Amino acid sequence: DTAVSQTPKYLVTQMGNDKSIKCEQNLGHDTMYWYKQDSKKFLKIMFSYNNKELIINETVPNRFSPKSPDKAHLNLHINSLELGDSAVYFCASSRPGRGSYEQYFGPGTRLTVT
Amino acid sequence: SQKIEQNSEALNIQEGKTATLTCNYTNYSPAYLQWYRQDPGRGPVFLLLIRENEKEKRKERLKVTFDTTLKQSLFHITASQPADSATYLCALEMAGANSKLTFGKGITLSVRP
Image 1: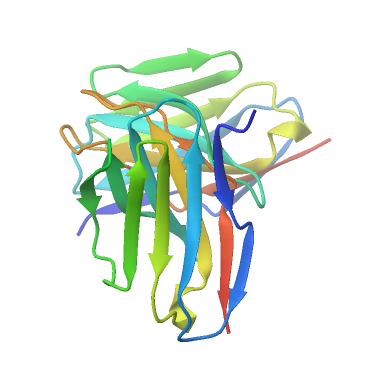
Image 2: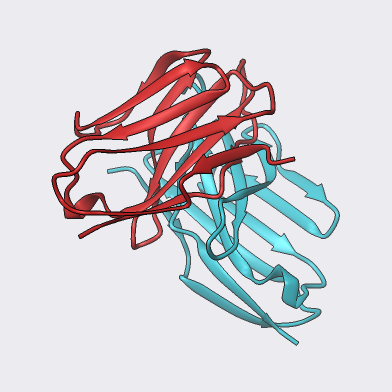
């Protein structure tokens, strides 16, 4: 059983298009995240939701809009795609609460903007 | 400025030796530090978590230390195997940071038979 799943695995699109990436977790976690890993392999947090509420919003262009229809899903919509958006996007989830908890990552979505 | 450094981009060792990976940080006061493994084309996988008041944590062949004075964490893999070849990422979390992890760039470990 896949714990954190993302679709699609690969996404190739042209500049200016709008695209979405979907994420689902079946771990019963309340907290979900979106990360971006660029060509230099830096993994940076973009957003975090706790039980459908946005709790972390890093300095991300407002062309990126996360949406959480329920606590098991966190989708990422990107408007007006740019070349610099090309990267691997990872969804993750974890337990909420005080202290630090391990994060479970999805397999990633490789976005290529041409 | 805040910085997380993993001491080299790549480490090559012989099977059976101990691999030691370093994570240094500046201008952070993390309450927690986590280590992840990432294989090519896959998402990171959690390995170990250590708190600021813990000096050392072990799990099977893995050991992590956390020195808040030196601002450094060491990650050891004993009796290394070719299957341990991967990229290893350290991640810091501040107290009360809403589970926000800040990742280092990672070190790619290659274990040759």
